[in-house]
Image (cartoon, rainbow, N blue to C red):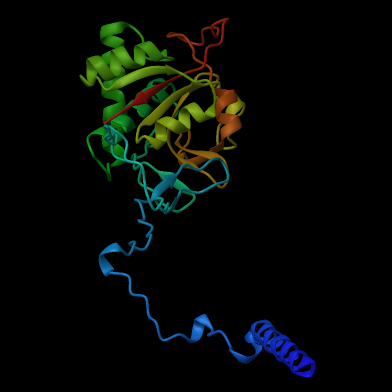
Length: 299
């Protein structure tokens, strides 16, 4: 009887131990399936799939160039979720067309050229002192879209303007800025799109040129250091500026004081330093207070 009881207890303990062994070693005998190998496919309806983010290119941005740079354009991509402003600003359209560019590093506004003595008659006082008249004549030829003007025609225009000034105003030699505008542009040519502006730096002139305007400046001609002038050069001298060379940092001019004055280059520094308004008259002293100014002509 006692032996039976012992065998029963050993049997029960063995059953319980076997059960615990099965539970403990179950991961070894029963492998869990790998998620990557399941046959279950999860399908997301197309309607709820997010649209791919895309970048929408905007219009090219024109980068303004400085002295050694060139005008260029670059494309800017908008963000995936752009913020739309409440209001939009319309682009500003300039009153005059952009300058005609001759290369990627410079531009020239097409202003026809004449020397103040078109046929080389420098002994004629009207032509010898005709830089203002020649500059205005060139400016008005540009306004009227003229080109290929004969030297004889230029001479006729310069003398006609000189005679008009002398007859109506009693002077034609060194003509101050205000009288160039009033006597020549406004009175003789009946043209009003002309204004006198201060010149704070050479950039002030360049800004006007980049807007498609041309500029007339009064100078101390001797400070221009032009080797084509008869030494030492004129003290009161007007030139026309019509373009700029960004690479060289030079203004492109029509200088009527020499027959070689078409597209003549002056450095920005020389131009700015040479600007010196003068009084109407004949070899009058320069004003004691120097205020640099220019005449801006628009089409």
